[in-house]
Image (cartoon, rainbow, N blue to C red; front, side, top):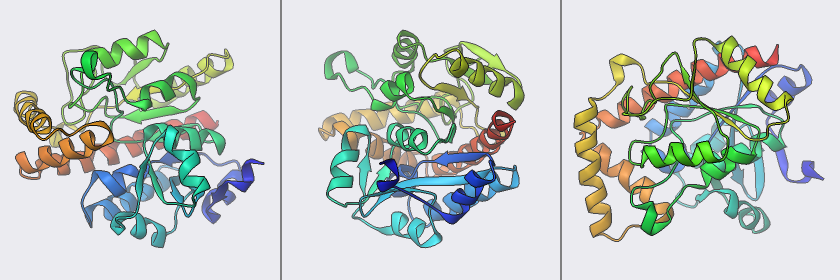
Length: 303
């Protein structure tokens, strides 16, 4: 029944037949996270990094109502330029598929599609979380609920620094989601290597990460694992500087009554503008670094 909805690229199909490790990639970063042409260029470079590290990339998106597991260059180009691509989370999938529309998958939707396709490792930039002032707005990303119930390991540069990171960690703890630092004791905050918060556990290499992930699922403990991998030192932004920029961006979002799924793209765009593009450079660097670590973990898990 599932095969009716899923469509695999040739490369992913061959990888599955040969039992090669596959790494899922989201498409929101292409359609809503970065400007053209950096978005399509980054997507291709990230796929190449995964291949170089011995795994097969599967960028996921909804195109004409089909869940695509692995995209062609033409499809990547379409996602990068088309204005007709919706931001797709868990709640949006049935509608987009039934209406044969196009959707770029968020962390939550990519996790769902990866699990449907039997992919255990997913590489992204940063996870969504509890937004600031969520105690009054109830604005909490569906990514967190997905991490609580879907068996996919998510390699990211921590939680986006536009969020309330403390509350995000509390939410994940309540739902039994381990937040694991890759070669770090401190939770990275997307653009910066550090935040005021500690991770739950630390692993120092891909093998240790894979052993922990496998143990979790073999014990029947449902849900994902967050592998928090800090942005490389040379690309990281200064914590005080980025905090100040984010405060300004949040204030503007509030003044302009921006809410719901429009908040994150607005804030990321504003941060890019206020940092004069250095945040985009940092964003690209951290995604590439996550692809390197994620593909090594996928290879270890596959053993």
